[in-house]
Length: 192
Length: 192
DNA sequence: ATGTTCTTGTGAACTCTTTCACAAGCCTCG
DNA sequence: CGAGGCTTGTGAAAGAGTTCACAAGAACAT
Image (tube, rainbow over all chains, first blue to last red; front, side):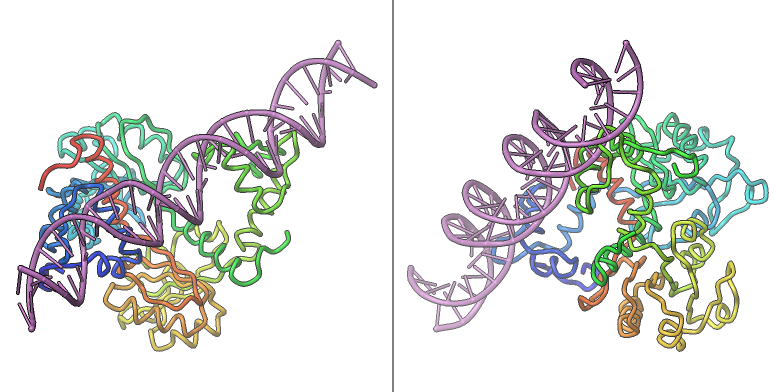
């Protein structure tokens, strides 16, 4: 909307642009203050700035990727991340064939440099794209290196202390969700 | 658990294996019948079979990937999908350099064969890994081809009729969520 | 000025989800 | 066989999240 030069936007417009309701948009925003203009809507540029600060993206977040396999390296070249305020600084892998290379401009370092480089590069978020078997161990090392958040692509649950935020992305889990919805819409549940 | 040969599992064990509570596990399962054994727990093998049928995964679901770019092709070789009941049958791309090849054993076909092959191969779920600009158009074509569900990696909202189930995966959105949690844990919200 | 038309911000009502807590049932052991 | 130790299934209570609905304010035309 900023690019399109729009000045104002109503909660109703925001709602159908994002698949929710006008009341929801207003309630949610009101949690962070009341910066709409009655009778007018929200000032687009101010709203953008407010959301940026609410999300903590006034400055780009520094991100590292651990595991330069299929998913890991796909992420290294993902433009969408840069444009939305995340900078992928460095990647790590255990495979000597991958270490030392640069993938989409991001250097791939060996695992023994992990703690050192996370600290030296001021990494705030680690994307975990390792095999599930080592995910927990990497999570431990990352935690002790003082990283603030982990986004894990490993399905396995991670045991962490409360000092960092953790989120999961699991393609198979989402597909299972779809499969459930599809079954519910057609058959209902089939007896085993 | 099946592999480990466990016979029975309690709601409490399931809960800490999956980051929820025992009561939640029991309530959820009870929606689909009462198949636990009082004083014992749930029979592992029966539970597996029940979940499989609840999720509609008694037979593997047939999946196609549209867009063989970075994310698309990473998914084509993703073992986890196969092991969890999804078969990637075919992929599509618009780029002539990619069309005709086989990536991780999956053939990449041109976009003009889309509708025909989705129908011929009995595809139930499409994973959308195209640039956002064409996501809506592909979604329309996929819908009319009678597919039952879409998993979209494009951030843009898709307009679809109620005939299919749609889910989104958005890495940047998850990172924004993490960034918010990190900010909330440290600074609180910073003024814009 | 005044009336009309918008749209926000927000208590209150409502709905949905989670947690509590306990009767009912199964198993083992003395 | 009966007591004791577990664990499910589930109403009822508590807690979250969403929607309603309307007063308050802003712009604009007359």
